[in-house]
Length: 251
Image (cartoon, rainbow, N blue to C red):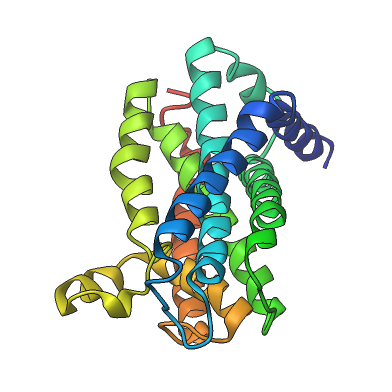
């Protein structure tokens, strides 16, 4: 386990050394979203009965921060290592593909949850929140961070330059996140866009996470959990296979 522990420590230390960029900046961004959307829509929108819009918004912003930062951690680490050429020092030790997968994804989970906790501590002051089902909060936060950490790993392996990674993030991760119900309930959408939202796995992560706070959601949390868990298994299998084959890493 020494190799796994060392790589995990290296990945955590990598983002912790630049905490202003990796931790503080996302928290400030989420705070701006809350102030702008909360101020404009607080008196005009009520998504769930008895839940103010600012309170509805906070879990969405927390989960959005968790997802985006988990993806950023694993993807940026791999692409930087590939471009600078120091990836060879990760591949030379006798680390199995499972150890590589576990270290990168676990470090991404740590960063995602750390940023999410920071966003929650700051934004919770502006809303009255309840914790109806804390178990679901923890489950969806962990699964969501693990999924985006795995997606970041896949993107980092696939991309050969920063432009490709930016395209992956800008045309897939960002739209899927913003169109997942962070700022609204999908029940307010026309039927066509509701159907589109149900194809988006990010929607189930955020909807299930929000259920843990209010006990209300657009989809049954058990259904959301099943879909999210299956999505993680598929992505994890793909990522492990890419590591095992050395795709764009050893060739």
